[in-house]
Length: 152
Image (cartoon, rainbow, N blue to C red; front, side, top):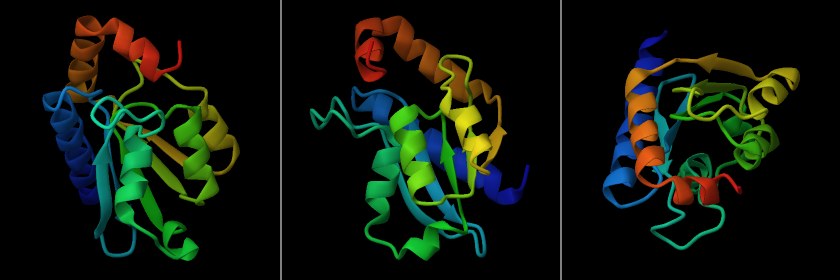
């Protein structure tokens, strides 16, 4: 694990915790430039806070990056506290983000992980206990909201 991976996952977790404190789904993320380690954006799931159908953690992260030239994404890593769903996987692929670092996939494992790999994206699984704990707590407390978030 690189120094930037530690920083990236810490930021993603901070965002997840912020989302939980706001009454939302505790999934956070950030996008880091691989060349210099600069944080291009960070965000967290805002579906409940903004009554949104699509503001998952990774989408919120990309939204908070603002408009960037397409080539910028080609040398970045996206960090997310939970395995990206199909929608978020699609955004990662669409922008050509070459690397995805995932906090955990015990609480939810998307088929997107294997799909990203098949598309040449490096997928790194951190198996992070803090990410697992906050997500499990949310699922236990609000199973109906979790099922809504994942479309069940």
